[in-house]
Length: 177
Image 1 (cartoon, one colour):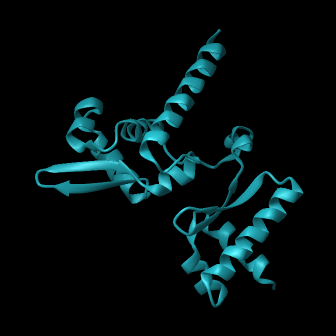
Image 2 (tube, rainbow, N blue to C red; image 1 turned 135 degrees about the vertical axis):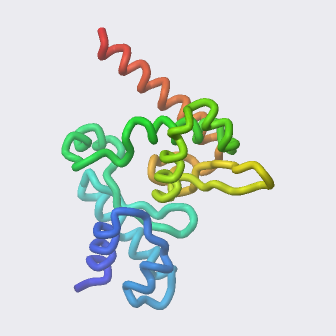
Image 3 (cartoon, rainbow, N blue to C red; image 1 turned 60 degrees about the vertical axis):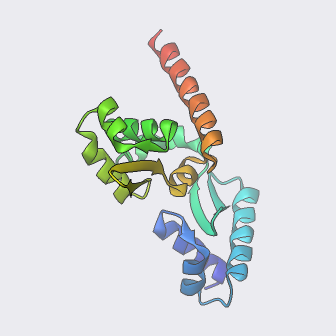
């Protein structure tokens, strides 16, 4: 089995970004540079073939196999279950727009039920909660940005999210007509 095929199998099976260190270990390679080269080659193969899948080398030395954004609408009906239900997704959106934000403000805006949402989102690696004295500060993680294909820079991410929400709002209004 070629290392390229092994890399593809690992990325597929993981279903999440893997660090170059993890991949280097599993593939029994000498350096992360070798893994990065394999990731680039695999990415080029997917791109050349016109596949709805893509392999991306993410910031922070991670790689992922994922569905291209333009195919997500077509495929979403076949997904066994959504990543997040409506409530946690709204809580996550609120955090992403107003981060860094005190947990108390999230609870005030969304209600006490968000404690369950926060626990779930933290377990999924989409947010972090940090204690600062009596305050708990909540913010999204780089994994959240990578998952949605957003910038890791919080200012740019907020602009991207506002634009996305505006488009979604317009589509919803058109659909209701």
